[in-house]
Structures are given as structure tokens and as C-alpha cells.
Length: 158
View (spheres, rainbow, N blue to C red):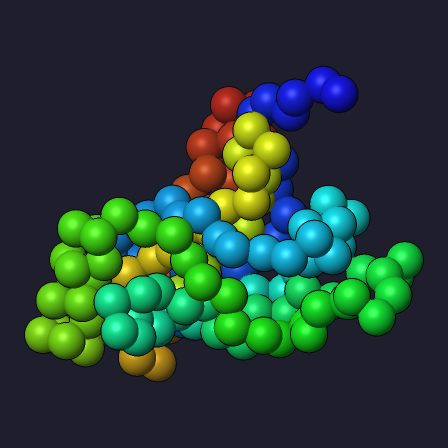
């Protein structure tokens, strides 16, 4: 069997950057059952409502939906079960300190296969207020308009 190389994206949480200010990211491993891996290889997962918690020195991914494997039998998994994330102990201690002191959250940004192993990109994030979201949208629109104007100027169209 040929060993996989590279990075293959499974799912991405696109709303996360809109709703959260990302301060730091971590690449974590994830503990999965066999039917979950097969379902992920089909490219099915939803991270939109997901979050991570630290309980008793372990990091758990909660509320992430990995649908049941269609070819599975009675051994199929529960779609929204809690899944353990794999981090080094010093990273977990650092996360505990940051979450407790400043009210930050752990949000899954993306799920992917890296050299054949399932990984989750976890972000340490702070929730955005409505006015922050409006400022980001205005900044993005202004940037887009500047790019259009530059493109028109290059073409000679006013």
C-alpha cells in the first residue's frame, strides 16, 4: 500500500474568522474510530458548531459532526460524540492558563489529513463584537475597491 504524502483538506470552518479574532493556532492529532476515519476519507465533516474544552488535563473536541459511514454496520460511530485531541502536556498547560485568565475559547478551524493522519487546526480565539465584524467587512470592501481601481488603471479604463 502506498503511503499518503502531503495535506488533504477535509473540512474548514469558514465562519470562524468572521465570528472570532484568532490569536494563536495549534495543530492537534485526534483520536478516531475506524468508521470515523472512513467517513472523513469521503470528505464529510462539519466544524461549524464545534468547540474544544480542557477537562482534567485533556483537550476534547465537542459538537463536531462526522456523519455515519454509509457502509458501516452495528460498529458505526455516534455522529456528534466528544473526541479526544492529542497535544503535548506543556501545550495543554499553556492553553489552560490562557483560557482561564483572559476568557478565550478553543475553536476548530480546519480538519485535514497530514501524511495520512487526521489532524485538527485548533485556534485560540476571542469572540468579536458586532461593530468589529462591521469594521472588518468595511475594510475588506475598501481593499476590494482599491484592487478594482488599480486593475482599471492598468487597463486604461476610467
